[in-house]
Length: 276
Image (cartoon, rainbow, N blue to C red):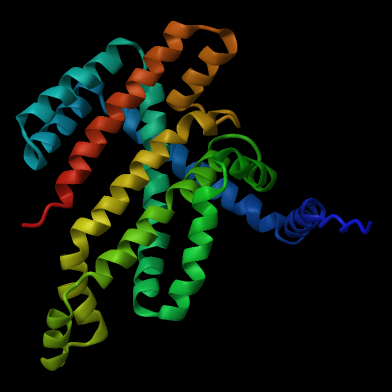
């Protein structure tokens, strides 16, 4: 009986990663240093704002873009986080999430537009997104640590890879859902590609695009505990410490803080996607 030779995917992967490490070591070091300074600088700016002031700002934003109930929940929830002495880890987590989501938008929105406008690009991008979404989140940690070491930087890199697909998919979908009649009308008035994109397609696709950004934020928050395994700290670090030491109460408090942040960000970003 013939035995089918084993396909050495593991060896190919190891060889590829080692080759990338060797060829682009300086580039990875520079990127790591830049991102670390950027993230830590943002964390310091958030921490420099008195908790009471930041709670008030977030509550006013919630009131402005949602309603009084969300504003009241923001005040109570964030004050509870402050009362549990988890304010600093919460700001560290917010900085990580904001930067990961920002990078996801910078990369994801153009790719989503490209996929909507070019069928060949769409056929290439979609299988890659399928792979990114179905690969277990823990697997992202391995190359992230290999290229960027331990700490907050690989945590953010793993988070943005895990959280980026919804931004690309829903940007693609939103633009494709723009009524063809409006597109033809814009063309008949002699609109250029960018005029069509920024004045017709993106405004009409905004609810769908914002749904993708909302999902990106939620997925980023879901990664904070996983990222804590490689030294990302924040609220995920508090949960991970509770797991390691079997301190159930401390771990639950950190988890509760993540829930509060998730609900506040979810409600505010959902309001941005509502059509005027």
